[in-house]
Length: 175
Image 1 (cartoon, rainbow, N blue to C red):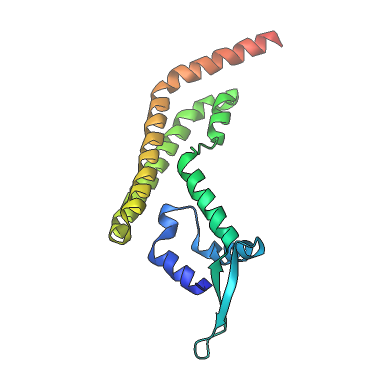
Image 2: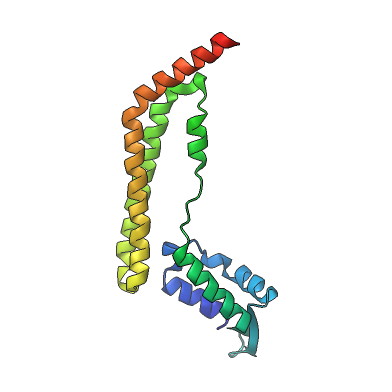
């Protein structure tokens, strides 16, 4: 498959909607895969006056790596630290009164993201396989969980702010 075919397939499959792969990043990925020996040039072709294109194929090493990545992708659970959690545990005592508005804005943003994502998912649903559809549902469920957690946080903000103010006073009296 040549780069343009891959790009077209990615657009047709709406790859950027259910993965973190950008269509614009495909050509760079092809170069990296070739440099690592995971794909190789199968041939060159030219249609009419269009520029010559390289047609790529996966190597044996590439097939082995792909098999390993598929297995690890299914078996490993990926939870990445969210910088928000660090900041939440180290709040600025001088800006605690801003916290309710900040959390409300985060909830609004998360809800908008979910709404947009679900609309895109519905628009492309007919193009997706069952597995792709399930992957998109997985992301929507994760967004809903994030919204639910933020709503719980929002409900506990008065207690959190009081606790942080008390901790700040205690720290101030020991200095």
